[in-house]
Amino acid sequence: MSLVRFPESVVSCRNLVGGEWVQPAEVPTQEVRSPYTGEVIGRVPLTTASGVAQAVEAAKVAAHDWGLTPLRERTQRLQAFRELMDTHLARLANLAASESGKTVAEARAGLLKGMEVCDFALSLQNLDGGASMEVSRGVTCEYRRAPLGVVAGITPFNFPAMVPLWLFPIAVTLGNAFILKPSEKVPLTACALGELMVAAGYPPGVFSLVHGAKDAVDALVEHPDVKALAFVGSSPVARHLYAEASRHGKRVLALGGAKNHLIVVPDADPQLTPQAVVDSFTGCAGQRCMAASVMLAVGDVQPLVDDIVRRASRLEPGPGMGALIDRGAVDRLETAIAKAKADGARVLLDGRGVRPSGEAYANGHWLGPTVLDGVRPDMEVAWRELFGPVLSIVRVTTLSAALKVENASAYGNAVSIFTTRGAVAQTVVEGAKAGMVGVNVGVPVPREPFSFGGTGESKFGHGDITGPSSLDFWSHLKKVTRKWSAGTDGSWMS
Image 1 (cartoon, rainbow, N blue to C red):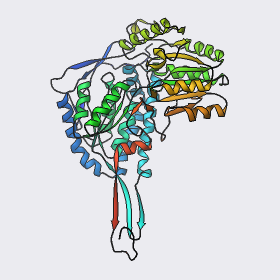
Image 2: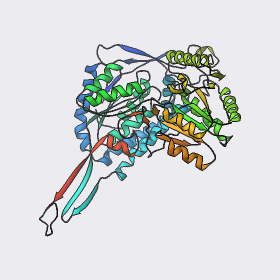
Image 3: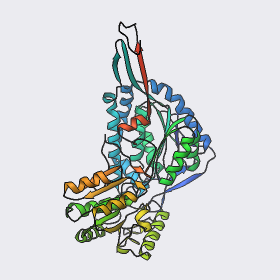
Image 4: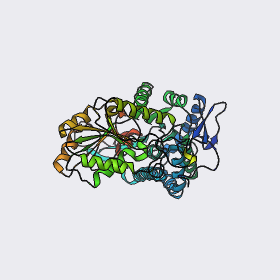
């Protein structure tokens, strides 16, 4: 039985420019292979600067009238899009799973999280109406939110639907024209979202889709009419893109990688904790910035460790845990496991060579859950982002020592504490460097309207990518001061 339904034929992706699906002229294409089987399921054009310029020009034309459209009318289009997503949820989930390696359930969950962002954007018609106040007799001040114009988002392979949905629903609802450049490894879901944006009745050019790799990214960074750029990906690329786009005068928010920690103390709930740890490091095959790849074991928690290994060993590849994105990811992780063992770590659970049964998946990209114990903080697996289903257990004697390891990380995305004592939890909440903290939650992703974002090497730029602070990223506040007649009293504005 197939683990996921694949497209009936190889999909040829095209760009969405000015409301039309176009094939960029004279550019190479790249094959899209499913992580499940290694088979070709699509082809994507590698758009060059001229193709990007074409999309920007169409978006610039659309941005003028769209920015003048009343907010309530903009939300009507988003409501239509959200309803279409709900109608096509099963198809979208299968498509996202087929190209990213997620299980269908994980892909569906990502879509639902993205739909929550749509709900937040829909609420803006009632929550973000500006403000006005009489600041002096006869004088009023007000602010109103104004769009930036043409904005863009560059999104990663691991969440082909959710991360784009973090960005464009808010950006277009605020009156911008948005250009999406998805990862060339997962273009099929982006095309499906583009089809739904067209079907929802957005004016041509308000939402554009440009496929490609580095050339397309560079063109968006350098184009003077792109006013803001959001990025989600690895920290080295995020740092570079933030510097380059800022140098070109753009507003930039670039989210990078992570090395999240789960702190487990002896009084942790023995039923809740082991499953939460397993779900955290194996979910999405560990290919998410919220995956916890380091467990800081405080004191004697051996029974919990044993249970974690037992539960992880029962995960069935395919239905229980998806595939890695490509062969390079498998090779990189297997090398990291071998190096950790050579450096003195103990392999409690080895996922190398684990794959689903059946010839169809023989060429897929698989690695089963892997647990390493006796890891020292200076080992590479303890501080480098692995992006796979590998849990490194670092043994410490005190909570203070655990926090010292967490705070020493170059990243600052997320940390969770597993305890039944409020005082212990509060110590971690107050002492952790990470921007997102969980208490007995393995994946502490905030739900809307609470925003998503870390610190340190996990984020370059100001504010967060979702929630209220995202409004300030995708718009600017226009301040208006009015006075219609001379006042009888004196003030600084007389």
